Image 1 (cartoon, rainbow, N blue to C red):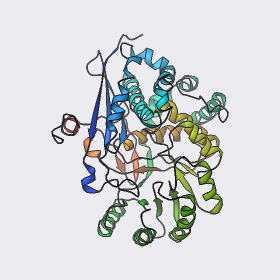
Image 2: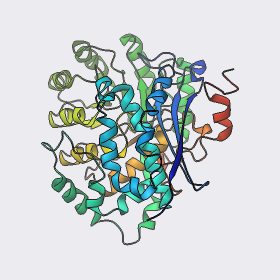
Image 3: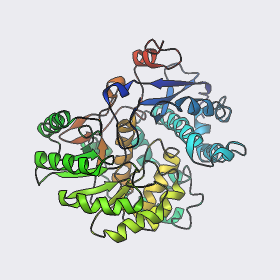
Image 4: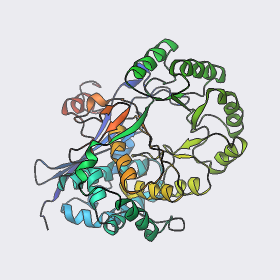
Length: 431
């Protein structure tokens, strides 16, 4: 066993002033300062650190930083292999903490903080093994992998034995040389042209630019004014033509009845899916929308707070596309069980991305899902290059798809220069 130990953990409140450019604007989030609760785990080997984050949009980022202070005791002083072996029990102790669970449980600020913390742990473990996170995961023995995950409260829908069958069946199709997988390009869609705060002129220019780059799938924000939504959908559909795909996202602003009415008005634009039309917890409301419009597809997940809620949405057939978020639910321990539920019910997964570090994270999750979990023919993931310039190894897009990452770790190290400038407490920008 290695004696490499955790000696310190640092948390930083990093905020980028993206509200100045209307980046990320939608029907309910109108002044987004894209932010990260940024965690660095230090070991007694100077060049080995674990980096993790969760994504927020400004105020409240400090709350996540504060919560992480309560998590540190669970790994400081332990060696990496010990943490790797016990990661499932550490996850349960943190997400089911006897006092912190009162302000959860497994939802909200405490769960966002847990995501950042465990994202850093998984980054550290995969770096320790000198592998990109996706490859570390798919090379684990199936039972070893499943023993690292959490199936609490979901074993009525999927058991470990069922999960093992899904994974083993997929693994049987992997090439003998896993290096062959490094050439994979995972299909993506872009949201970068369709933020709600953009003028028609800016949106038109960005759509044309993205068409010239090879993009074929476009998502735009709707929800503040249905007549303006119709105008913008008409504009984008005319620009991209009938052969490319268009999706819309109203970010939870409509009631169930408003959603049913407004979808009826937007159908004319041949929408691939309607994302988050109403309250993200309303499993039954989503089903009512589905029943009213059985010919359309609903997508949701970026605000679904835990695996139990995903279980209900998927089993109840309240969604058509499962949009897991790498920072909303608590990291790999919880994300992979959700992917396994989706696989059991043959529900396609189209991960949410676009915020700080989310594209860098989902490039790994997409590959794990493709290679060892999902059998669905639809492969697609969101991409929006927001804040990518701040990362040492940002996600790379080629021909409208994610290039497979090959560097060890989970890919979210922010440049030191950006940390020094945009640390909300000590950075030069915020002074």
